[in-house]
Image (cartoon, rainbow, N blue to C red; front, top):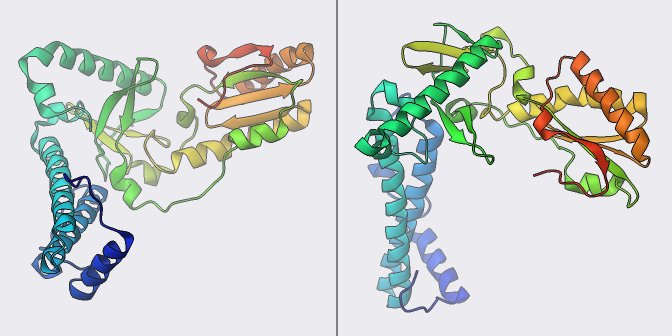
Length: 323
């Protein structure tokens, strides 16, 4: 960020840090802060505060550098402070847009879509398409018992649609507000490292995929009121963990793991799952092909809905898994 291309030495940076901590410390401009509490996104506010403090630190270090005559470092820190300000202004603009826009557009706004893109004349057709796609997915979720209409909602979460890798659109719930108050749970999934441990060069593999993974699970009714959202004039809530809530992967993985253990014990097969993708491994190609069909029927009997477009039913030695 220094236009001269020169960088301060490690010794000089340590000296600046020492001056910084001995003069202003980490609570820069704390006396001038105004405490404000509302129903805004607390995680967003926390992020902005951290950026603001870092920006103030950079500004203070620029002043310290000027005081000791290090003009190159002062330029670097001033540019850094300016960069922080630009980031904060951009995030604040996005927050204002999402707060002030009419309710009918809130479901269409997302971090990558601004109000100008939603409201400009040339985007009317796109707006109608997105609105119709959202409505179609909403109707499908109501039909399948994934959500329900209700007025007993404590938290209305922003909701919108985002593009998938395959070009389709996914309806999601912006759960940052409830994520802020949700306790983090650490858990381990069987990723690429575990797969390398059990896979042999002569093995064959097939792949199965779970459709609408999180929607196989339900949460307690007294928690459903925190998974609410609003679209047009209707209020709905998810009956189970939604895509976007931080505990959804944990709940899904632990639930599916019960079925995976049963499959492993019954068919004596190597089987791993990473989120909604499941890989079956065996030495015999013919046996694996039959076992895969048996496992499909077993999972369907347990109530799991599988996604045929994710299937790899012909055993292969070379296969794409985990992304």
